[in-house]
Length: 119
Length: 112
Image 1 (tube, rainbow over the protein chains, first blue to last red):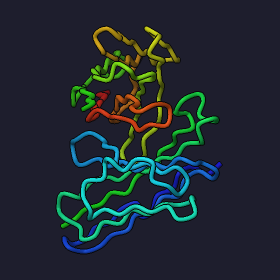
Image 2 (cartoon, each protein chain N blue to C red):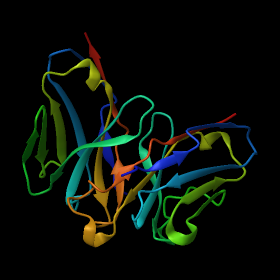
Image 3 (cartoon, rainbow over the protein chains, first blue to last red):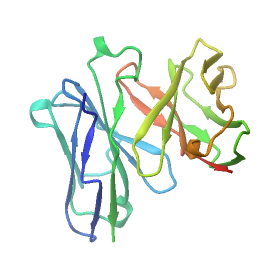
Image 4 (tube, rainbow over the protein chains, first blue to last red):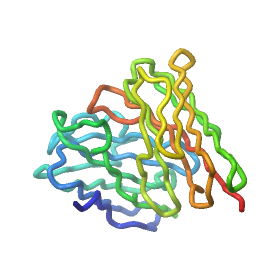
């Protein structure tokens, strides 16, 4: 079974530019999560999709961030325009639907992350 | 809001035991987790513990939970250089499909 795939693995952009991160969850996983770790700080939740719907987007920092999951498969996270404080590692995770989520979080698989550097 | 605290650094010698500590705030958390991040890699789930358990052992890993004090620890016996990584404590917030609240991570350095 393929894991959660994130692309690109690294991105360096200038302040004011636009960047789009992509996450391909494990096939069949209804739940898709985005997290972010700013250097030296905790990993923070950004948002949660259930299929194509946003279940919880309480962690999105501001309206420069736009996440989509058209068709309930892969997801994109767009940052426009990027600011210096957006630098960090963006993780994606996926998990099965509720009835299949046991043992807990063994289905909650993280990708390797995208390291975003805004200069 | 919910918060998870960890010490940032730990350095041990190869063969010694490592103990990484964590405190959390959400008393309703059903599960608590330890994740490992090796350099350049993603987050790997190491182990989890039910909130109604005091201890869980899995090979070289021992998780201790003090629910009264909201304190979680991860002990790694016979620490190896390959255990060098960042270890994140996490609790789940918002039910079984909720999101994870992570600590800042403890960087474990193992010296030969």
